[in-house]
Length: 145
Image 1 (cartoon, rainbow, N blue to C red):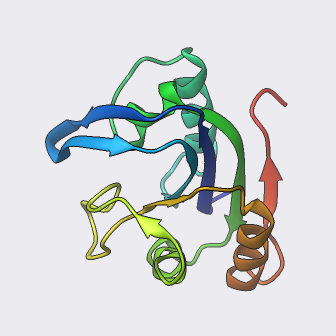
Image 2: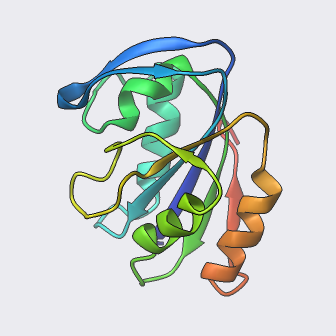
Image 3: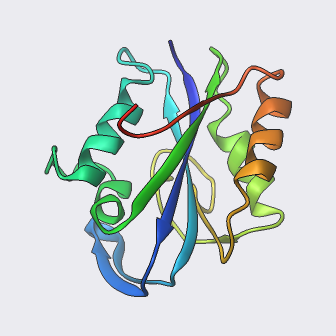
């Protein structure tokens, strides 16, 4: 299965991280919402890879999000199963009401960011947005299940 996903993370403490070539960033404690594409050959297996990076089972640092995952708690991932590239459309939607981390996760498009921040958990709002984008077909998955 392929599509777009929103990875939902919680950061319990403020941290400073170097994110590859992007440089140094200060991440406040709170919730982070990362939008990714799973349209490649592996499809949503990419989300499992993110879960494994977060848990320490995979130490490879390939994408920007890989630097933040080991310091975060993965809450869940909202999958948008569709052959349509919705990653940038979802990012533009979140840009309207969430803070964004400049340049994060968007080196292959013109978006300002694919990582967003909110002090509180807005997962239910994101599920509604995902359903609107994916025609009420979003799927929620949790790490370890």
